[in-house]
Length: 85
Image 1 (cartoon, rainbow, N blue to C red):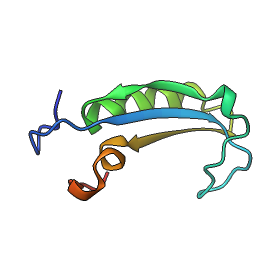
Image 2: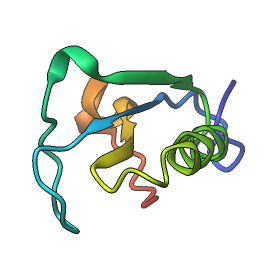
Image 3: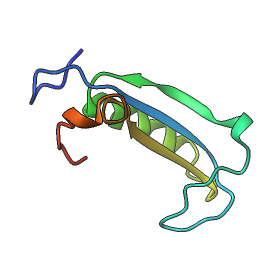
Image 4: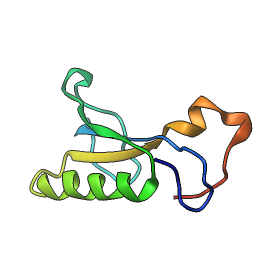
């Protein structure tokens, strides 16, 4: 699957877990062995749907946070598509 705007295959990974601290810029996981790997997706739209579903399922736990990682940027930083999501 590819991003419909660019026609290029993009890779987005959705992960989550319990954070060590809570806050708007918090991103350090409490226990890396308990990371929830939601999946890998070929478009930002699909990744966002999965992220939203996972985040909503843990809404009662303020320490749980899910993230979308733009893995295509990590794999080929010289050819960054410059899409901001």
